[in-house]
Image (cartoon, rainbow, N blue to C red; front, side):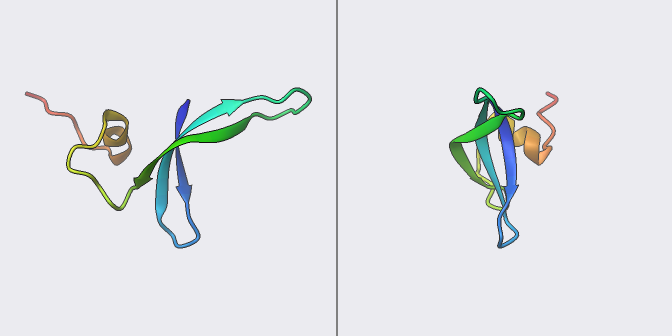
Length: 62
């Protein structure tokens, strides 16, 4: 699983959790969206840790 940033036609960036898999006979992997987390321009008050990494907010050093 991995975090996927997708730019929409309106220019917004959608963050989602994706899972990659292979279909027999295909050369490249495919992926499916497991969960849509929301748009990056609409931050939450307490985002989960992976989203903090995407935003590049430094963790508390205390």
